[in-house]
Image (cartoon, rainbow, N blue to C red; front, side, top):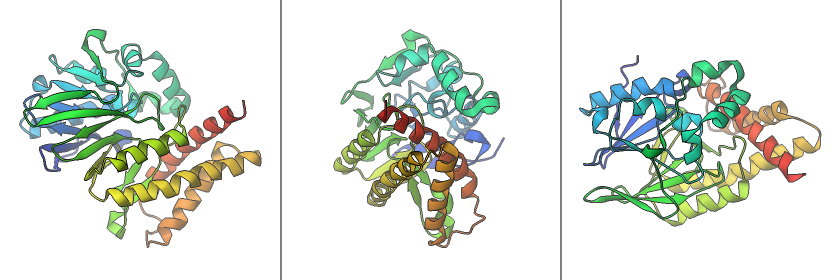
Length: 315
């Protein structure tokens, strides 16, 4: 296992790398060090050993965890909840109202992920354990959770990526934990002097209009920080917002044009990758940069979601 140390993001927020898909800097777990010790996101079950190791390095024990919050129930954000709970006897899981039943009975989640990841599923996600209903707490839009004397989290319904998605406002850092709603932060290209933010349009509940409204809501709250599910934090909220507003219509229009020509998911993914590659080349990112390994994976899944969205528009 990597010696990767938790990252101190300030305001008693720490980031533990979960090495999702076996990749560094892919998906992280946020630790909010408060009297009611809270973590946000678990990633998939193979990330749980990294979470436990990260907690140990912070001088914390899993038995101290009071709340595990998942922004939504996709397996790369919540697949490890059941396994992690075995180490956290006093923890409750906080989830969106539309996600609770899938944590209690994850069969549909498993089926959906198997359809996307096929033979890779077991190595990426297994095991996926159900969460006992008495350990699940639902938080609806604008409800709150006090975890410390000066820290009461507030939950905002933020669909677009998924219907079962909320984002969590943290007053202590004036930050928002946005899961996938505010896109993916490709920090990998920071060595070339830029940061790339792209929407996450994975199947099967992607709705561009809802995503637009959600990112506008977050922007209008005038937060100072965005904490991304993938990956890390930015204080340049304006740049992340600007890029999302540019790329989201590009994704949708590219898919529409190709779909109208009878093209499928593979062609959509290739076209998106070409657009992103041209953009990054213009910012001096080398053609063989490691970011393309991640982009290839993500854009294939994004293409599936775009194709699924378009298929529903014509029914």
